[in-house]
Every structure is written in C-alpha cells, then in structure tokens.
Length: 202
Length: 177
Image 1: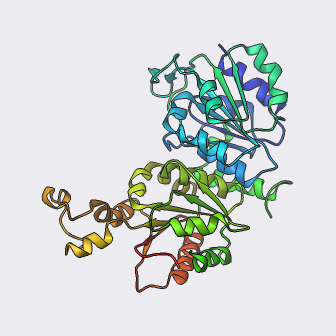
Image 2: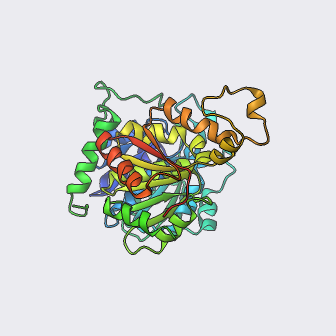
C-alpha cells in the first residue's frame, strides 16, 4: 500500500505537459507538489464526475495526455464513465483510481465494497486497452515514466493509505494555487493554457 | 433525419454533441453520427454528459448537450458543480417528455403540485417539473414547440450560452428538422 506522497511524487517528477485532474483527498497534496496551469482541482462537489470531466479534456486535446487522479468513492459514483472512455477510444486518457477505502474528506467513513472490489478487473472487463494495479511504492515509481507514454485508454488502480485531508475550499489562504481562485477563474486560466498551448485548438 | 438542425449546429461552431437519445432526439443523434466533422459522444448518465462537455470546453471545444427532461432531473449537481461553477457557455437541449400529455389533460404549467395531480395516470410529472427546475437552478431557458422555427431556436440557444457564459437550455417539444 502506498502513501499519498509515494503516489504523487513520482508523477510530479516525470510529468511534463500532461493535464492533471485531481479530486478529494489528493487535491491539496498535489497542489503542494505542482504549480502548473494544466492542473485542475475538481473540488466543487460534482458527485463523482471528475473522471468524466477529465475525459472531456482528453477528447478536446487528443495530442496531450490527461491524467485523472480519481478516488474510489468517486469512481463508484460514475462507473459508466469506464464504458464511455473505452467507447470513444481515448488513447491519451489515464484514469488512476486512488483506492484508500474511505470517504477521507468527510471523516473516513467506509466506501461500499472497500477492500473487496477488483477495480483493475472491472476496467479490464469493460475493455480498457491498458490496465495496471499497484500496491507497492517502488513498482509504481518505476512504472510512471512508461505509463505517461503508453497508448490508452489506461486504467491504474493504486491501493493507498488514508490520509488526513478535510473539506476542500477555494480561497486565497489555500496553499495550492489552483485553490486560490474561484472555479470560474481557474477554468479560464486553464482553458487559456490549453487553447494557446502547442497542441491546443486555435 | 435532422439535417437542417445539424447544419445549424455546424454554422454555430458546435464540435461535439454529447448526450443520451430519446424518441424525439433520435434523428438528431443519427444525423450527427454520420456527420463528417461534428463528433457524437453518447454517455451512460445525463450528469456524465455535462461533466464531459465541461471538459471538452476546457480543452477548447464547443460542445452541445442533448438530453431528455427526465435526465435533466438526474443531472442537477453535475450542472451546478461543473459548467455552472466554471462559468462555461454550455448550451443544452432538453427534449420535453410529457408536454403533449399535459396539454391533452388540460393541465397548465402553473398547476399546483398536489398529490392528486402528481399521481394522475394521464399526466407525466416530468413535464410539470422541467421549467420550475431550470428556474430554481438559475438556468436561462427557451421553448421550441411546433409553431417555432427550429433553426432559429438552435442559433439563439448557442449564441445565448456564449453571451451569458453559463449553461443555457432549450426545451424542445417537437421533432428536429
């Protein structure tokens, strides 16, 4: 089982121009490691729709990899997205389920099926082109560079230890820059970066 | 087929149609599916459509969401937490199940929502809830019924969303040209 730090640090080290979409327990930890306009915190409680939003970015920006750091609870709220991602053949889409088994933000209540659901098998059955499972920090760290290059859609299940993150807000006092702005402001910043970027639409 | 409608979407710059078909919107989906440039993305739940379309917009695309009013009732938090909070111009079509039934039953849109009304077999409560729901969620909306021009209504929908920088709805109670 990985700590959140062991999960995020290798990704932060190898990430170049990929979009990274975060939600719930990894929002603040990622914001401490990264200060990119291509980070997006799906922290406004759209009930599990982070993976859908990230998939939309991937479809609009086919030459750029999009990494979605989803939670297990969030994934269960929107399992249909697995089918959609496969159906649209999103080769640049990397969906990571950070499986800590609990609703961490609200106080560690158990996620249904915690410890019993084989998310990797689920993704395999739906038809994801590439599926990985990690519960060892070294194996994950070694795999990240290749993961960021391979053709997807890619599904990654990572067993993580629960952390101590509480409710997420957006205000100037937040340490992570992407939480210092309203969602509308940050959406404008990110869209400008994507559309003006080398692989963006013009 | 819905060729005039799809031509109108193309002229308005729509790049993706995202949603779930019903009997009214089926011809629109069929026509988009065969279209050389507008991409059709069918999804598994209506809330998924709004989140995915919000991502498309972030990435520089111009999506249109197409759902039935039953699905609108499912999609509330997805609209609120993505497109609306993002300030995204998000035009969406809501096909109006139950509107004809409501008219045949002689029920007006402002009828009191009593238990008797909401359990009547000749009334589809979906239509009763559609407009008040959009109002409650702060979503501007228009109505395109039999006597209205579909092409004009679609143009107004997309330009209205772009101007208002917010989710904007068109309730459609007729077939697509």
